[in-house]
Image (cartoon, rainbow, N blue to C red; front, side, top):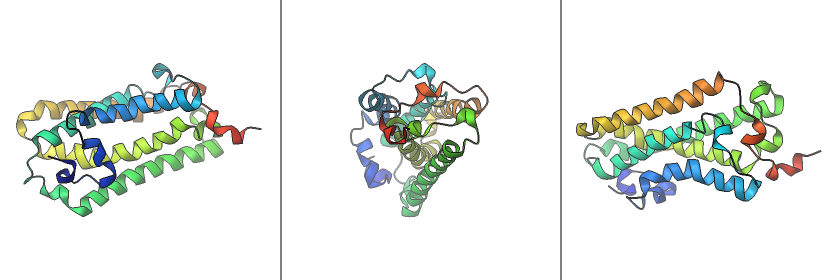
Length: 206
């Protein structure tokens, strides 16, 4: 199936343009691009072992789940069973969920940055506007959309013979949720000075 028959919104169809590479695109977006931004715009190498667990290894788990679902969607979805997903209202709902959740995360972290409700988890203003952090909100929007638009249908309508891959997807999602939701909110926070650079936030200095 193509990105058009999958019902993917036009702005994200490029992710599915090459069927062989498409399953690897989420990993590139979540794991490689932020590192390139850190090196190119913040003048630093982001150490994965000093990030939030939701970033590493959490994003590894999430990229596995979404990548596996993309592979199922491209190669093994039945267009007839997939008809409901082509409904424009379903796609609009998936877009709204992606943007809404990203907005929720952005607003919560902005308020904590400005008012420091939870000081241990608060960024400085420089860190909040760093390229890697701003890109993080784009990642949240896109990956939330894909979770609803690709992963959920993959778990529901993909052929039963791929039960083992569905189990892997679910386990990967559990691993991501454990890191990003539970552990990141119960374990001591990492050194935030290593999480985000300050190169792009110079206008807040002083």
